[in-house]
Image (cartoon, rainbow, N blue to C red; front, side, top):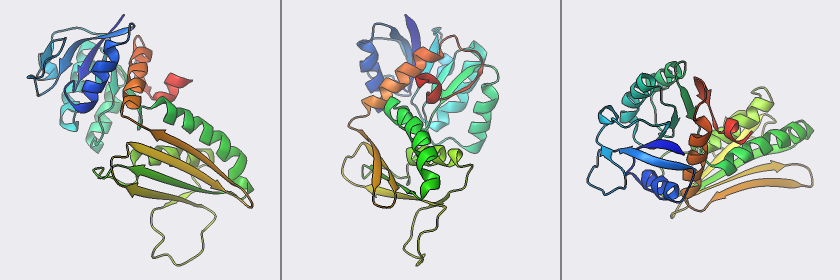
Length: 251
């Protein structure tokens, strides 16, 4: 049985993961960390990671950026692997994460969904076949009306995976309203839609002569991200120090 610490246990994703793990016979949460210690849990909750005196095989993190520095220090000190899902990290924190990964296993991904990360693999194959045969590539992403960043981190993940195949030849275009010119061959357009309570939808369009191929992923709840994080946690147990991502989990 994998023993996990849930960092950010009383946030939205922390509650989602807590409920998912309660139904999983292969992993259990032995402690949680959250500034909110009032919410009842079936495991002890500490207000900061420094206070946690419960050992575990892995930490699942869905907290806030301000808590990541302490998390990384704790992970290195206790040699506990981390599935790091918190977004909005500063450049300094990213550097600190990379340094910490020299001493402990850390898994970081722009999207924890197994479906999205399988999509990344499909896009690499599709791009290899279609990109040099005259197919234009566009990405359209849709999210709820509370999402501040655009395009989404996942849209960038998909675009970067496409660009890697073609050695970085694509220029990302976010707005054509002022360009007043035809589409260049090396453009990769990204469009963002915001509305309602859309959890997440990403469509990659390969538009060629006389045919269009669309590869699409739709998330209907945030549980898909929680399931991916749990699979990542199971994968990371016992791994040697280094940086990992979800491609390692699904390969």
